[in-house]
Image (tube, rainbow, N blue to C red):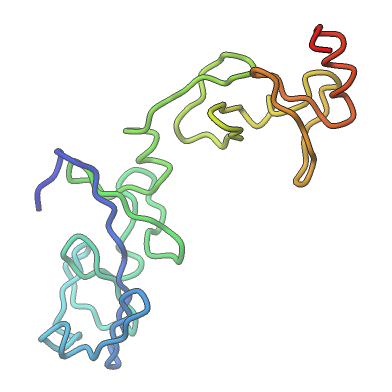
Length: 171
């Protein structure tokens, strides 16, 4: 497998040794897909035979569910909703991939660095630390469903819009 030149998102394939491989939403008989009995498969992690009912396929190898893990933090990559990133020969979770290869940015409110793995709020082309995503007038943090107005890089809650624009000479 070619590595290091590009980022590859590897989708996980869960297979049942009882005769069905689940690949996305497509179900195919194991013998048509694998061409060998599942009990003869070797795990890419521990190099032992896979006799489990469920197993994973990623990076052109088969894995026990517990053996497919992030090379840095050790978290399991076979859990539902997890993504496996493969770069420079390393299997990585999203957090560690972004920590190593993601791009940092600046908060539109405080102008301090935002790490690639940090949770953020985005409004149009502006990015904010979670703690900086608050009304510029009253400092109240926003909740889901709150209405606000973006004025330059300032976020103003619905209750303070009129006063804020008046004080800043916009009315």
